[in-house]
Amino acid sequence: MSLTRTERSLVLSMWSKVSLQADSIGTEILERLFTRYPQTKTYFPHFHLHPGSAQLRAYGSKVVAAVGDAVKHMDNISGALAKLSELHTYILRMDPVNFKLLSHCLLVTLAARFPADFTVEAHSAWDKFLSIVSSVLTEKYH
Image (tube, rainbow, N blue to C red):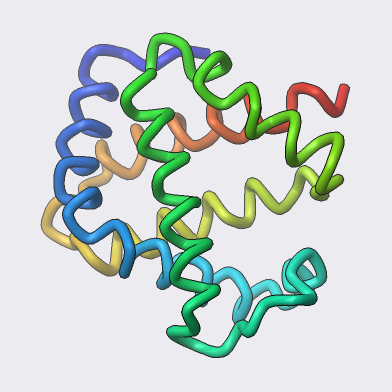
């Protein structure tokens, strides 16, 4: 699966806005994830997961930075996220479904933050892009 030129353009266009608010968006994505899917908290027993906590903000920044790496390397997402894939597969042993849940929370956050820009086409492009990212992050599970 690969992105069309139009889909790439839509992802890049929205990313230019997301990157300016990366910390707060990352925090919001995780707050949404942990509220809506509380089972995902099991991977963070040592975190203070109350809204706005320093650990939540720091990890949210890492999540958005990883998405940013994928955006910057759309021609080689697999290479860009290889170490992250290995970390989540072999060390953290993250349940692969969590990447889909996180992607969903990211889409909802984008829709809430950028309603005028989150058109049907942008939604579709971001959904496809995040599906590719999720596939890369879970490819070592097979």
